[in-house]
Length: 149
Image (cartoon, rainbow, N blue to C red; front, top):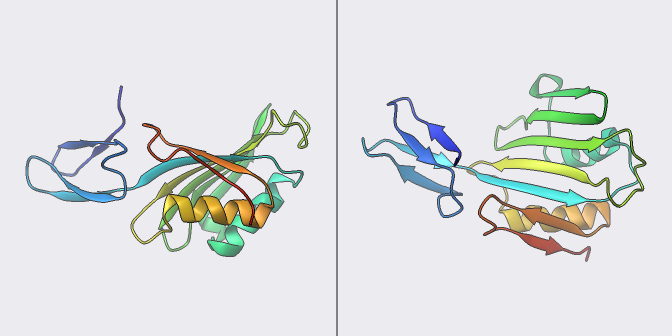
């Protein structure tokens, strides 16, 4: 079942790759910006808190902008940047070694209007973590691999 954005008028706009990063109109004529929905994956020996610090050094967050939590297997940071242009979920299993290649950092981002393009962000992650980063999107239109430069 496709994801849909519910509008105040009651209409819904499907979350499709061809709609992402664009203003879309519903059948009532109301417009909404459909953010990019991108997942980035990369390996890192850093604690997840340190990964979050690198992310928030470029995309500032305040304490009230996010939640840091964990459960039996996963640890995560979930929230929005202070400017509201990026929604994020940064997570990794904390029951498996950070250096295990099967335990990458998973960074799910909603990129709203005014945020960097998916490719710009993917390259920034590769450069700042010094690791190969892969990205995936629901319809695979924005799937890519980024290498540190």
